[in-house]
Length: 468
Image (tube, rainbow, N blue to C red; front, side):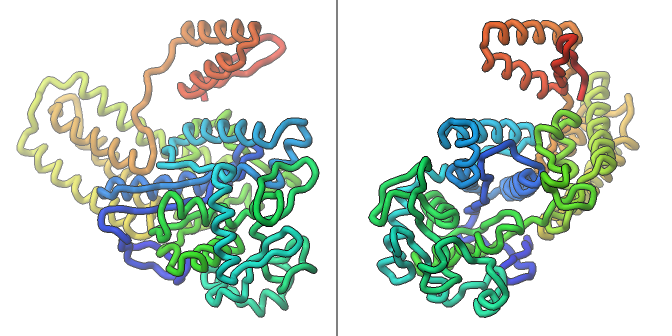
């Protein structure tokens, strides 16, 4: 299996630190709002990477954090007049709903930054003791130049950074020994959450969080560290510096980064009015379509989101769903149990589709080509089955399409459609729950219907529903 390593800028054979096991850390979102489709790409991509390792028999320890203390969270909390913890807990819950909608498996562990402060203080103290960090007026900085390999991931030169601008500069630069030094701990401001430390009551810098959580839940060395390409510098670069300065050994063997997602060929931003949350997309499409769309391009290729491409993805996914539904129908009417000699030969032919599928996935997780192999299998199924086919043959094809789709996180077994009267009963129950101010139950009903492809719209005329 070959993976593209950002560290070496080339594809390398994947060799795990421990045979049969993969230790993988993926940087998660900062939880101050609903996640957007840019957040969704690494979630879907690296969930698929995890699924493929599991398909190949690896035991995967998959850790992905939630950053639940940050300037944006604090700003939102002040705006709403609530605690930062209330904001982060609310949006962690919302994020998990969206992840479930995209069929992203829960991580082995989802650590929260605020629950790992003790470990951060310990690592910072260790860095000070080793001479890699220093304190000035309550702020602790990392001595960037002392770490001789700084820049090895982003391939940036420290002198170029110094002369080329302020990409690493942060507030308080006058206190620093060097303008390129970055913050490990900072004093609290009025109204901010804070923790006691040997230096001041304050909170950690962003970069130290992932170094500590990765070490605690995966150990000093990991196989794969992954995230969006925007994290290469400075976040992942700083993680390497902190972790390797503390532990004295290579932090991660392979660094995987997905490319950016654009909207109608423009960078997504609120100012352009093209900001799209996963929740908004889920109101127009089944989130399985979003997942299919994300996997229809190689993860290292920039991806452009547009209505026409989403429609194409909906149609592509429907081809697989229809084939699976057809096989299910034929299984229900098949009268012959065992395969014929000819059908056994046909089953052997399907091995070529599995081989091409695996070859695609083992070439740096080329999901686009893997989907193409599933399409070939679908075409083969459509042209070699009929009402005369045996149950055994139909079941083999059915299981194979479902299995290969599942590795990509695509749910291709259609649920039975809800009857209109059942939908109306649930809507009435939701309305009653809202009158009783039981908003938890009302939300549960809405989510239950959404999972079954039913979207509710609250209008002046009452609640209307439509199929996704």
